[in-house]
Image (tube, rainbow, N blue to C red; front, side, top):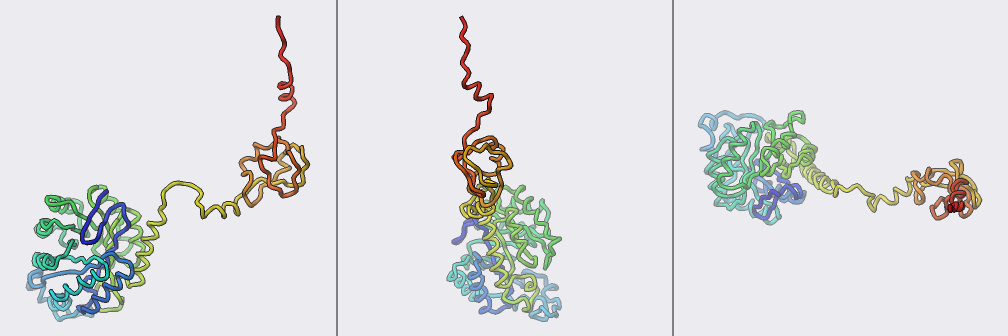
Length: 367
């Protein structure tokens, strides 16, 4: 059994599905909103909440940082201003981490650069998430792997060779890895989800936990992913789809997150033990809808049964219909009224003439 432990969390391929509510920057740079989102995600049943940490000045080229970003989803005139507006600092992260702890959910974060890793180490984070864009960033992966903490790696827009390189880099230091299948489209259409890649990842990396990070609309894909063996589900979370920002449109609102977690729990419950048997809750239905053998009409004691004497009717509780051919030719010990249930104890075997002769015939003595 594969297991990852961090903070107060334990994830395994034999346990219930682990759900991460990806808050990201859906808080719109508002600390109170971010804290409220943590509380709401916890109340919906999420086991973890996740944020994103960037050092914008070193992460982007000057050209990208200064690029005009004037659109309906922008929080600044340039892309750098937009990102800086959404970025929390030390004091905010201390408050948010404490809020998560007080609401009994794991505090997780995606690190996008070396400085952010150092920041999160000071904060005392217990695991690391890496976005799909950093799957080939082996220097960053190795920098984090050396910390000997579990790593969750999204595998969007990647081929297997790229995933293998990331795996080889991490396993030089430890084996606490979870690969998350994802598709880098925002939102991702169901026709593009390629959820069977979860099976591929499980086959190619048998010693790694596999999950699903969804950018799809709705709650169905997560349940399908779970059916295919995903033991971690990461889903973007918002309080309002209509809020300003690019991620809100494919994020789940509280009711959606609650229903997704409900359906994942229902999936766990519905699997059962795999044994095919009549459950206690089925007994009454089996009797009501099932069939038994009944007297088609009033029959006298001693009657030798034929098919004309027997009806197949509900409810069940007596001889089941597959006994029909077995009781043909047997005699009744007692009379039966019409619609009386036929029971085996009311029958005796009716010997044929030849059987009776054979039983009473005396052997011939020879001298």
